[in-house]
Amino acid sequence: MITPAFELSQDADFLTLVIRVPYTRTSEFDIYIQGEDFKFYAKPYFLRLTLPGRIVEDGREKASFDIDKGLFTLHVPKETAGDHFEGLEMLTSLLAPKGSRSAKPLVEDTEACGGGCEEEEEEEEEFDWQIEQEVYTETPAETLKEYHKYGFGNLRSGVFARLQEELNEVIDLKDPDSTAPELRRHNRLEAETTIFCADHYMVNLYEDEEEIRNLLKFKPWWRELSPDPSAHSDTSITFTEEEKEQMRKFTNCSYLLDKKARFHVWLGLVDIILAYVYDVRTTEGEHNVESAWTIRKLSGTLSWLETYHSVQDVLVSFGRRTLCYPLYRHFSLITRAVKDVACIFQSGKACVLKCLLAIHKIFRENDPAYILNDLYITDYCIWIQRVKSKHVLELAESLHNAKLQKNHLDLELEILEQAAELALKEEADDEEEEEEEDSSSGSDSEDEEESEEEQPEETQPEEKMENNQTGLGTLETLAECQRGGEESREPRRLIEELGERLEAGLTIQEDVPQERHSISSSNTKGEGERKSEGDYYHQCAAENVRDTTKAAASRELLDVCLQRNPLRIISNDELDSDDDGNLLLTVGKGGP
Image (cartoon, rainbow, N blue to C red; front, side, top):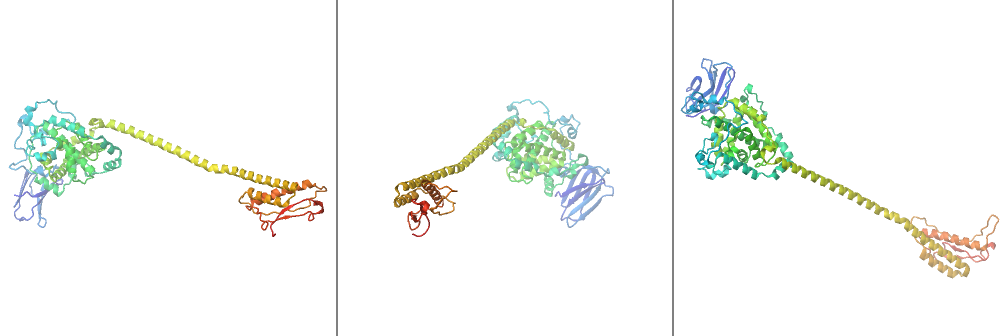
């Protein structure tokens, strides 16, 4: 017989079943309805369901068949109108176990229940999620060697003895069949402390702030839900066809777990979901080839076969492993993952089941990790469909109230951050000092450049003074020539000396208009007073000096060549009667 694909939905009065039975004859449908039992047969398909509520066959039921799609739709009235059937999307739990006429376990632990109670009554007891249930008493390893178990509810043993080749690729624990639980924890803590890298943590803390901020802003699919337990929030979760098919493939079974084992199972579930939500956030919802490694590495349950005793133990273990193994090692990602898991549990067990199905798929597609499906995930997918929703909500509240701080992780994070802050402060102070030194040296260099620019300006007056002194020396030479001319009265020799000294003493200055002056004799008459002959010669010498200075300013040297600058000698006969005996030199521009 083939178990067909099916879906269930409901309203206030009816339960609707949609069964996919392609390639079957429409005249061969058999339906059985009795309380919580529903059976359907259409060769070669057979479906048997144990419903969470009672239905009745009273003539109001309706059925239809779509031949093209192969869908058989049946509307069955509820025995009590308005009754809400919880967990209709938990397809695996609706399938009754093989060889059983009900969903009850074939074997019950009557001794633990006092002889008359059922397992469901035990599940009504409340757990104290924060405090260990009992004080641990160590038992000799020789006594418990054969009881070193692991897996879902610690129900497995001897698995890794047959799978030594895959052992190292799946878990971190060596020889789990002969390692006691307390030794597993001790070895796990040692390995985490050894592998913790302070440099990696600091890089993520100070250099990858923008990337971490983007990961924290990511909104995963469970954040879009609006959990409201009173409104049956499980119905807001939808499963894909692939997920439904996987649930139908699971074999429905019951698990005999005592109170302590159930407590460990709940804590292990939190640990696995924490690792899953971290991977979803850091990959922004797009799982990659490293997702299987990330999930099993961050979960102490999957990597070390760990069993926890409180919610705080789970959070500390997850926090330590998050700061030791993955790419992004930031404390904010740890606290955000805790809030995400609280949101998932608050949304109901359907949301938890959807996460488990996603993990099952990731491990199923990874060659060595499929062993973890057999040890944990498959059993969790079946078990979560049968638990009471109130335990899920209680665990969500406990996660909301949990407080995880950096000093709980025992990795000296606060000391590292304080040292890093001091180092950053010192580096900032050094940079400020260097900037101040650079600015001061820059100002000093500017001052030096300005002083160097001012120095040529200061030397210009000195040059002018030297030029003036040279000019004065020339004038003095001319005056001496005049005086020597008076005494010797040798005109030709006087002219030659005058030309040589003028050529040697005159300097060239710019931006003075060129002028030529002639020295001419004149009868200088006062207002009624005649000057003496000596005064007249002194006056002529002074005029000679002034004209020579102007000629030097005009950048032209007096040429001793008589053809270019001839000197004309005026005799006493050419002078006026009042100037007899005086000799006047005239410098003029003209022909010979």
